[in-house]
Length: 116
Length: 112
Image 1 (cartoon, chains in turn purple, cyan):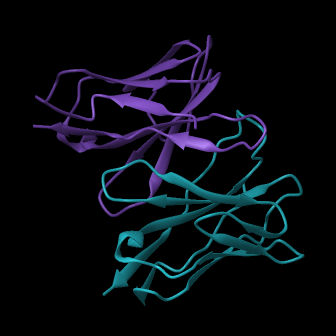
Image 2 (cartoon, rainbow over the protein chains, first blue to last red):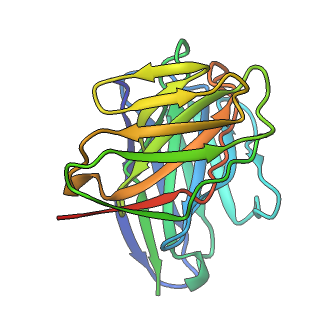
């Protein structure tokens, strides 16, 4: 089945630095990918929709200058957390639809960001 | 975007059948109903998807009444490894750009 891979799976950084998380569709092309964040014991919150070759669409309340999304190819979307602060510490998950016939949404393994 | 309502948590014992019901009163005509399972520190995993009536696969069944305003995920003979959070989502499943919004999910605890 379709596979979505994220890297890194976990990252620790100092406050003020920027962190990039990659999301790849391994065996299919994804014109659209979605980025979620999840705090402990909470549900997934949609941050933005990443569109190949165009600007991402951000959900209300999500700072686009803070969370930079680049979808440069049909198999890769990146999320960059700029000038990270401890409150940005979270579990970030990407997803994409692998089969246009079923609409099944495949999720990456997630990336845990800890900002010291 | 249809909003979903699920029980916050459920308890069960190994070997029992578990039924988790989800309400989605505002479901649209072209919306599909999809259930996902999530373990701690992992991305959600697809369980089952349906549009109406009943769908069954190797791990679960999905029951959808005629009015489609609710759905029930049925897990037969659960084991300890089924302890997870289960999410019900509704959306236009065939549209690759259609975003899915997660509700609160149901935290299932399976006891020995």
